[in-house]
Length: 470
Ligand code: ATP
Ligand code: MG
Ligand code: ZN
Ligand code: MG
Image (cartoon, rainbow, N blue to C red; front, side, top):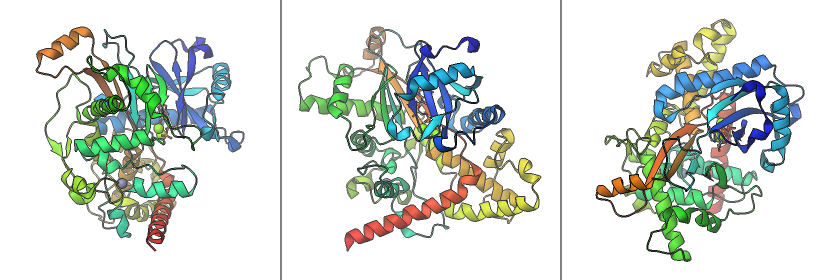
């Protein structure tokens, strides 16, 4: 990719989140991730090129030096900062504008700095996948927090019984963010029980919100509708899926088969989530397991019996185990972290020059990772303890907000023959690859906001559920 000869016609709109907009190359398997700003202050807070460059460099370094060692080499792609011609960025911004979903248009793409992040396109499979005419499928899941807080600092009993995602759903519904409650519960997905995971993924399919997207050949084919009142069309999805999952003996006809297609589709996703990153490696059998009290959410629609019996633990190497383990660096809960944040703030007021040494907001180098890893387990009253806990909390926040990309395609004919040598039912077999994306550092100064938001969500949940019982 020659950066001096960038042509907006080589790129197309791919997707966006709250912080960035992504375009994909029409030929090469690459994407560009560009920053976004709130549109009302695009004019006056436009960052200097230097600031934007530093911001993206921070993301890259945080990915490379912090998240990659914690989550595992094979899952994380740190990408590289690129300096793009301003003319290209402006043309690109005009070109993608009409494709953007309305609910994201409160922010505008950064067209001032010319800085972007270049990453492999994870909706594609690496070139070692040959031999099948069917384009790869990619399932993107934003799993959110997979455990109940266990900190003694938690003041509201309901936080120990109902998970954050399920409580937050009520708050989002009340604020008009979504029109329907999602029945997905992250604790089911992270349970390691095939039954509970199956139901969790089914609930994601029924109500994807921003927790599920499906791509085929790099194109988005299933996600929440721009008009939030509309439900996405599962029949349309099954039309896309059935060429991958139909049995050679069965023709696609109506309800019974669409159920079978979804069953197999979900099973492939579960397999990838419990495997060790790609189909060529065999899984690490050791399990990591949460105590039952931390892994069962009372708001999950699953039957109590199934919940209790279904805590099988996650294979140690699996993408879910890796993410959960980093999420659990938050072991004080925001209620325990907030007082430590205030301790750090007070200290920095007195000794502002210490900010860099303590690395409260970077640099994201080996020293940062060291502070995260070696934080004392008991509060000795020191500033080092307070900083260590704040950093651990920030890293955990990243892991609570990341996405998993599972990309898979049917094996080529040769491989299929080989696979049949093992004693396997004559089912289609898939090559797959699993990655983690959206691993941005969460700002140090968002901690007070997180503290307030937590109490708003919990109080709203308590009010709405107790009034429902009256
Ligand atoms: P959020 O609001 O979830 O924090 P964000 O603004 O930080 O999102 P990303 O999640 O990184 O942005 O990117 C937005 C979307 O672009 C993703 O949900 C994904 O669909 C797509 N995307 C991002 N990076 C890649 C990639 N490397 N390959 C393919 N698709 C990608
Ligand atoms: Mg995202
Ligand atoms: Zn839940
Ligand atoms: Mg993000």
